Structure formats: C-alpha cells, structure tokens
Length: 336
Image (cartoon, rainbow, N blue to C red; front, side):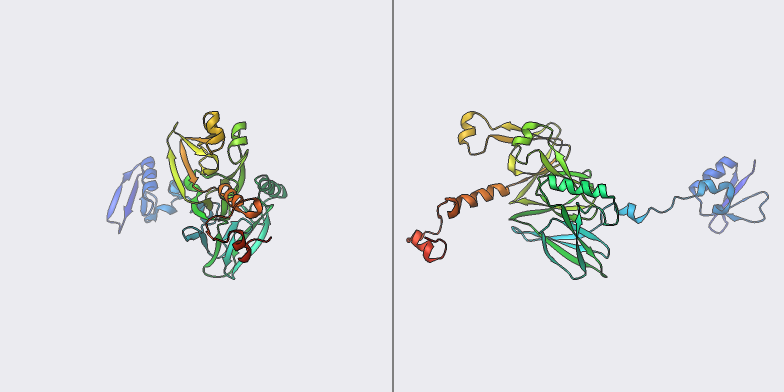
C-alpha cells in the first residue's frame, strides 16, 4: 500500500502520509494541487496522476441549450394600459411566434415566416407527422393551420411588437414558473418564444364541455419559455388552496394551472336561471393551483355591441339629439 502526500500552495502546506483510499478521497475534494508517493521522481499535479484520475475528473460544462431550456430566452416589455401591446426584443437568431394578425410592427432585420403548425420547432426539424399533428391541434382549437414566426437575422438587438385584438390586458407568463403547462381559453394566446408548444386540452366532463363557456376544447401551452396571454378588461389572479372552490361566470375564466379542476354547476333555482341574467351555469374552479379571471369577456362585449347596433335591431343611445332618427340621417349614421 502506497503512502501519499499532497501539497497545495507553494509546497509548504503538506498533507500525509495517506493510504490509497484516503488519497483518492482527498484528490476528489481538492484536485487543484500536487501529490507524491514513493517511486515519483518529483511532485506531480494531482489531475495528471492516473491512479487518482478517476476521482478527479470533473463533468463537462453544461451545454448552453440546457441552461436556457428549449425555448428562446427573449426579452420583452408591455406597453399601455387599456389597449396594450407587447414589444419583444430578440438577439441574433432568436425567434418569436404569434397568431396570425397579431403583428403591430417589426424592425427590418426581423424576418417574418409562415410555418405549418404551432412554430414550436424550426422548419428544418421535426417530421411531417409532427407538423401535421401540430397543425391539427390548432384547427381543433379554432386557430389557423399556420403560425407566423419572427426571426432576428441581423446584428445586435431587434424588436417586434404584437397588439391585443380588443381592449384588455396582456399577461407575460414564464411557463417554467407554472409547472411547464397552462390551460387557457381558446383565443387567449397572443405570442410567445420559439419552442413553446400550443396543444389542446379536452374537458373530460360532458356538462363542463357543454356549458363551461369554452366548450370541450381549450388551449394547452407547454414548454419553459415566455408566453403572452391576452384577457379582456382587467385580470385578477387567485391562488386556490387544496379543496378551495371559486364560482365564476363561465366566460370570465382566462387560464388556470392543470392542477385546478374545472366543473360547472347550476346558478340556482329556475327563477335565477330564467331571470338572473347570469346564464344557467357557473364555472367552478377547485384548487390547488392558480387561476386568472377576466372582467370583460369578448363575448359579453360583442353581445352588447350587437344589441346596440341599428342593423341588429338595437336602439340609438347616449347621444341625446333632439332630432332622433333625423339626426342620425343628417350625421350619416343611418339611411332611410
């Protein structure tokens, strides 16, 4: 059995003698030094000694792709209050994906491409079947077969902005902070980093599918990157404990963790159903998990606009003209 000596610094701090097992342990804990045993002509670097090399080998550095996850690590800022938009800042080679029609502006070095599917992979990767499945999921959720990608092809930084389709709030959400998955209403996704996957989430309960406000199918956002979700009006976030239940208007549910159970229940008696003005069912959200609610569902706003439109039988309100219909005609708002 060899007797080992270790030295650190300027050979003034020596450790030993140590047996083989203790020497290997010392080498694994402090490999940046020198060692000597009988038979060595001089002190040798610990890392160069084959007898200790198996314990001093350090793992290779983590690849950059592993540090940053699967999605591009984009920067962003949200601008505005009521009619918000999100401005995404891209490094060279980075990409963002967005729904068709969401673009507000882009800098000239940002190349815009239309890809088949959800854009979670580059056009060079993934097989035909993967792309067909991705496109099929989008059709089922009511979206287009294609997604638009925006890639920075120049130097330095470049910006691209995406605007919300109606008044509301744009929420920036890092999927890795939410367990890698969010369940959203079908039209909630606005844009995100390349690498984020857009899938479908089926409601397993038939009543929830029929009366839950979003039907059987909702959007499922998966990955570890940033996504930007749009909601109508003001957004409120609620943290639900295990077993805690929240009753919500079916159209006000924007998103929730996949640990949250969504169901529906009748609003009350027959009188409440017929004359309460809240519909026949409420959504019930049961924790644990986080839910996001919107104060102005698009269906509610569209219904009010349609009801007030003259072409839809609505009555003119709010202007207060003493001329009534004649005032509309003179102002160009109505034809006789």
